[in-house]
Image (cartoon, rainbow, N blue to C red):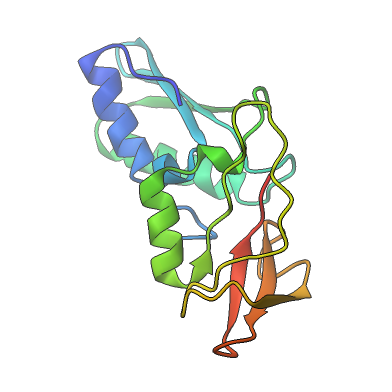
Length: 166
């Protein structure tokens, strides 16, 4: 995430970052880590940088429209939302608060990688967000969105989504 440099950019970043993700409305765009930056280009003109969770993410258009609506509602006349593909988004970009909200919502959050540029640790256990058991099974590699898998807890028998690591 790019840190805003001016007080105006910081406020605009706060407003844009508070927009809920259209596919996971329990998370804001800032918590999801897709909002990369907000730059004031001149009086009444702003450029917002977004990185989709994956190339071709169908939600990027809705995210852009929602950001434009919010910023225009706060007096910004011209809003340009640009898609930035490099560096690519990673599940490590989800904030700690975002991970907590996912778990509270019943979605197993992605496991963190070892560090920047490191591969995702390959483990077979995914913690159930309902009872905390790691005795879970994969039901489908895809769930309600391409970035989630459908799992079931063997201990409590509850199905749940798991936000896949990228």
